[in-house]
Image 1 (cartoon, rainbow, N blue to C red):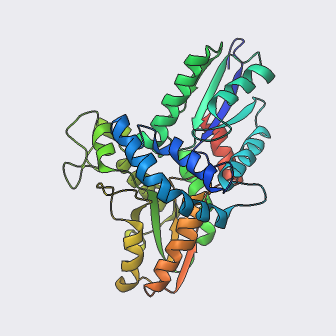
Image 2: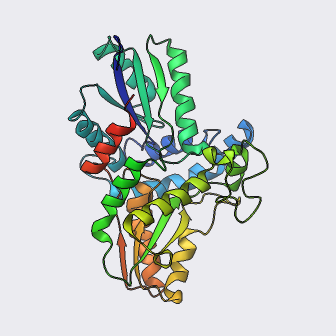
Length: 340
């Protein structure tokens, strides 16, 4: 760094309800699902769908799911993000702050903390903890952070770290976290990424004519790839598999956590759990590279529910590989990603 520039690092994650009470889960779901970049319909249609249909039915079930993974420290995702902040603070002299896109601590509180405790900061470096570009993750986080910054008239500037799906530090850290689990030649590795609506892929296509137009669109070079979630997921998979020395027959890709009836990315993780044993795959490892911190979608959906689906379908051995969380190689990678 040159001159008198003083930076602060803001780690941005998704967020969680404040508690597992239905009212708090309902509040969180309303904030999350009313985001126009999550459900991209008109405000009126979104309100009817979310507040009239989805949330009243989903909140009690989600509350029960959260209770199955909640810890004495509260939400695993928020607690792990706090731990990551502490670990990163050990390797940098720049102040590290956390913010959640939904729930607390919110973006405004992060900026206010910079103002209150670090008034000499001239630039906030925002790292959305989403490796891949998607409207409903990286884009909404960065747009929201910029809006809150503009509305608050803060004196420091902000910069946003781009998605790091192919960054060597991220790939190396992810491979390192998986390596202890890759044993034996009979185990299959499933890369399970969070799914998104196909419509989001099409809306993010800056060429308006590439994504999802051919079976090979993700491997055909295009400017659209800079904003294509599907391409970036497959790129991460290929790079990690190469790093681990895995032949193509030892791994595959699926997409989890679908919501609603619209067309989402496939194959679906749930469907694959029912099919893999019939294909002779009885020993399964599952990793979720679109998440860097363990959360509801990894700890409850993948580690509990999908394991039950796999065993029920005839599988024998099932292992969920935890997210990188606060592993030293990931902390080092984060420090690299936020470097000027």
